Length: 381
Ligand SMILES: *Cc1c(COP(=O)(O)O)cnc(C)c1O
Image (cartoon, rainbow, N blue to C red):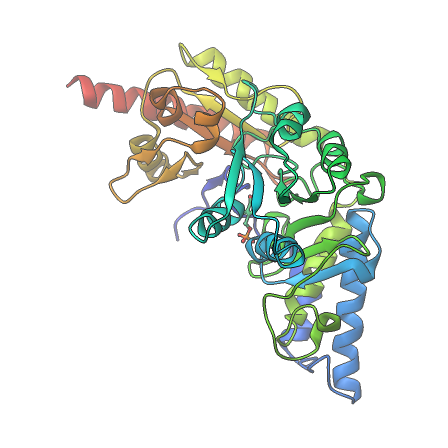
């Protein structure tokens, strides 16, 4: 059996924690009831889902009844945007940050083809969305604004409270994608007036893939994407994913209040070692960042072919969006920060979780350095 790889791609997805798996197991086996059913097998499932809803809400300072389970972070983002434009059909302008996930960017592009005007707000050189830049983009006909809490590629955190305040001043519905931030930095929606919607995803915090959540501020407009049964108080039709919901709740409970100083220390150890060993290397992004993420310019080698060498050596990391040839499209996030295409293509993201060890970090550094030497030798030869 091949040995497990060193997994430094935790912003792409994470492993399901054993406690999460154990929480899910009964609902995949003998507790298989439909939460809508009137007998005990059903009400057991319904109770598990409500406990999970309270656990998800607890992670973000919300009330359980304001949390809707979805199938993923993408659905949460799409639902928020759909809700806003449905509430204000005459407002035909959207504001999104240039570093949003495709869950927002592609939906906005889709709406642009249907006549919406879309303003993409840029970021500063450190990768942060500035409240003043959002304020300048807002118009009288702006229906919706989206700025992510923390970026998935750089880990850079934007000043969401200030941005929410700017949106509130102009009466604009504001969504923040907190898929990467949740469980890594404190989030308290009760202390962010002006925030209307918040998106979460299970698989980025040790729950399974295929479960997400959308928080909706009481009184904010809501419009379902799915129509059918009355599940989720009529806000999201379709029989609930009970097992994954229960697992997501458990994952949120385990993440709540967790001190990630040790993770940050390992990330710093990785960063420092790579900067020391790789001539010309430097970090993309600065200021306040997620504790688990670093994005590094490797000093002049292409990230795409390197990822293949990493894979052979048993290391998982990521760069831009990989295409089939093994080369990468330069990241739209790094480009928005003012990086050249060359720098963007020569940068790599390493993202850790609470299971990453010092020993793995040290081995990863050796793999990175050796792989770069190999690639350089192959190119020179
Ligand atoms: C992964 C991710 C998403 C998408 O979540 P899915 O559950 O995979 O749809 C959205 N936003 C960010 C910032 C992400 O990292």
